[in-house]
Image (cartoon, rainbow, N blue to C red; front, side, top):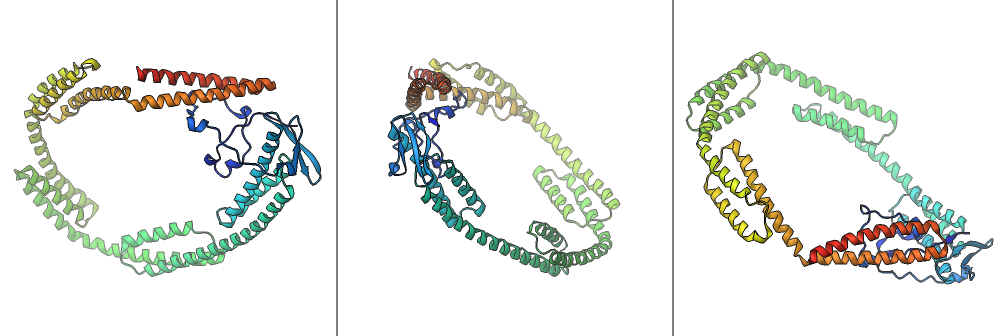
Length: 465
């Protein structure tokens, strides 16, 4: 005989179809919350939810005055459990609801399989689970009706399996067609002269081939042989092309010698921007020029790079001189940042005055001019740290005086208080029933919830002060 403790009241609107059918949880199944894991209940979540009416429960079962519930099964009357959490009629309703849950589960899977939203195997598992529940006789309801529903779903499952087999056959035929398409494309490309793009496409075809479902082994091998032959033909043509190209590359050396001459002439450019553009254009032209032999390429590149390095070394020296002109600004801004840092820590009673002083320092900072690159990040970060400190204090001040934050804290405290009252009622009932295990679990839950309630109340008190 199963003695049933106080069931909780789940919200049907908040549950998924599968979750809505599960057995109502009891205090014994509830893990005591911790400060890190408890989600603050809200008044809406603590509000009792009206249970659905259970009709005709007495037609399929009965309950005795001590809460013992019996099922009227085809093989005779079967005791399904005992309900001690309410009236005898509540017990009959509790076990009738478990039957309704099984009916809903079958109805849902029947709808899903009709709408092709599940597989035959998944549906069969649901039917198996419901039949196991039927054999367990832990509910009150029409057994014959539910067994017929299971049989009806079995028919749909058989039909679904036929459909799935046909779909698999169609996928296999689709894969065969896709492989034929790839082979024909490969054979067509074997005469292409677009060497790079065609090589990349052959690689992509091979990768796509690997991802396709398998087909008849002999047919697949024959198609692969055709694809491989086409690729081999293209590779032979490509190698012959580049062999001829090697002879042509000797003529390309004159192009790079001309680029070296232009780079050496650009060293006399006095305009930095114009010089940078010239060398950028020369580098672009160098990259686009055809390549000679490896030995010639290395020698020519060293000459070109030497001219390029000389220009940019001269440019760096010029920039360093310009940076030195900005050195006096460093001491000015260091003095300003010292004054700004002296405003910390921010005094809430003098916040307005300190903000004005900071603004004056910021204006002076802007007037002082730019900083050398090596000092810019260091000093800017120090000023930003002061600005961030003021911003943080202002945000905290706003938060403390924000009526919405106080309202949220009070709502959370009320929600915790309501939850605490619920647990305390359940604790009294568990003690009355002599359920020591549930009593211990509820006491742990109450202690945790009281700690959370105290923390929230303290927060609300801080915000209201």
